[in-house]
Length: 165
Ligand SMILES: [Zn+2]
Image 1 (cartoon, rainbow, N blue to C red):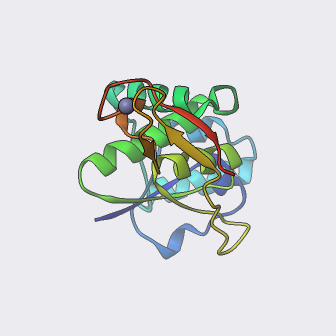
Image 2: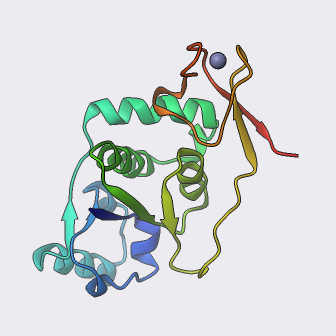
């Protein structure tokens, strides 16, 4: 099943809900919407069943913290961003295809590092090319995405990233 997740930025930029049924988000997103009209749109989408609020479990939030440690973007991500990513991970672990709708640059960056698809509401059709190499300082294995827990599957060392040349 394909799951679509939407974050605050996509919501504020006026993502059109009524083209897809069952779009997921985390309840925290509502707290980040200060525009009254946007808030109403949010509530209507929930009431009509187009938007489903769901919280990730602690297990997946912990995994996101470990992945962020490798990615090194801790300071740029809000709690809501982390919850969105954890929810994405949760759905992915249950064999779902996941796509995040977001206009937030650091969230897009993390999604790329995690191998999760994303779409932007503003820039159409541009997918960022991964400009980082994830590698293991222990056994030198490289990864094209950060695995769960952010550790090397071969030797268990905490992974790092470096810019791609
Ligand atoms: Zn290793």
